[in-house]
Length: 149
Image (tube, rainbow, N blue to C red; front, top):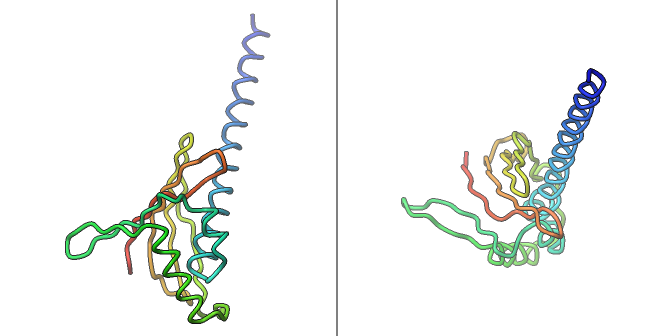
């Protein structure tokens, strides 16, 4: 009986350890999606393919203006991005690059939330709350709310 109990405890600890590692792996994958599609892509004039790979087509940026909720869909944001890049195709210079601190990533099943801060030249610009879902083709940002500092 003692042997069975010991084996059960060992299996439980192994399963818990594997689950914790799996969540940490998911968090790292989410960071890569955010870094590639959002920070390097949209913020630092990356390429549209990288942006589209990390954002769901139904994505909306939600904001508040004049006490009203505003929505900015990803297709509008990409259109604006393309116009900005067309007007100035040169890469972003280092002192103008946006950098990101990952304050929190929380994962439950196929849903996740990331709290990040965006900086330019060490100046805090935004605190963003990104919501993600995991689809068959990976994690996608589905919405964003933010605070401008």
